[in-house]
Length: 396
Image (cartoon, rainbow, N blue to C red; front, top):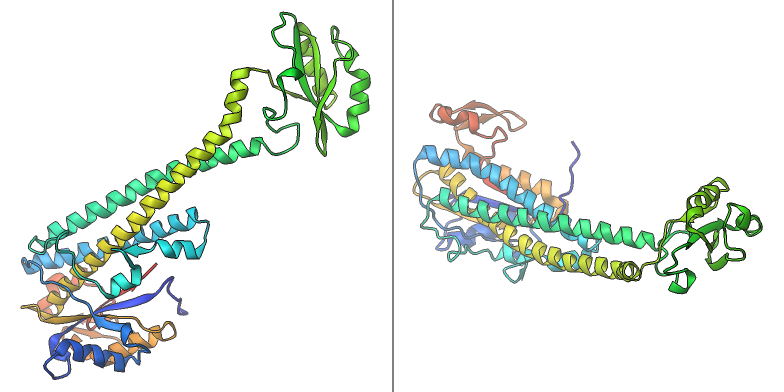
């Protein structure tokens, strides 16, 4: 399968046992420097230590179960972040610079936040069990996602309503709204017997209409046809007649392929129609603002929660992989876009020995044999086994 470039900047979040660090008084810095050399990174800012606190550890069974749950939740959080970006793209109509400007987490550009990540101990207490931390993170992210979906749905309805109102004011005289065209003086108002009707007549039929409208049905007021306005296709006429003749007159107009307009003057209705677009526009703008505000907050908080979950995932997998007590170094690496695949290969070549005898792999890296000690958990171990803990983070 051909390599597919990620949809945004890609980072590798890596955890390695402290024992692999080059000898020295500062193993963390030594490992960071060694990785930079191994991967031939263009900038020292492309690799940095990723600080992860130590969490309360339960039993091995609990950790294995949590590993499976975290993997599932990780994917769900990533989907929430992606959906939020899709929402921002929609409301900003794809303007990349405006969307990028909204990607702020803890008052920092998103990549700056990621590179300088620190666990938020005030919000997520590390003395709480891992299961409780996961529950707190999940409730927060899914609540944000649900609220944004609701507001975005309301916004789309308001946008659709505004579009419908605007469409009423476009088109030709046979279909468009007339409230902003006609005037009170175009109608006979308050008569017990007379009524004014409107007819949109195709320009090619104007002579036929003028010649024949008076005799189309009985009791049409002679010479009552008045031109109100015209466009490229139609001329809009008003015609006055006795009320009892109106239904037949409208029927005869349709037979002649003239277009009667269902319109009766009402001062209150006209005023409401004139305000309809203004109200629709105001509602659409108000909800647009709500969507933008909530989407920005959802992106910031859900991305932050996602990276906190990644930290827990790295910790759990490192304990399962490297054992107790926890003694590992976690590092964030940003490989050059052109070298993403080569970077993964270089890491595997350098640290592949960490797999030890726990797993035997075929040439494709698939598990072909599990160590007897892990047999109990073999059904939930990812068959795309890596020799060390490594996860991708694509910043969307």
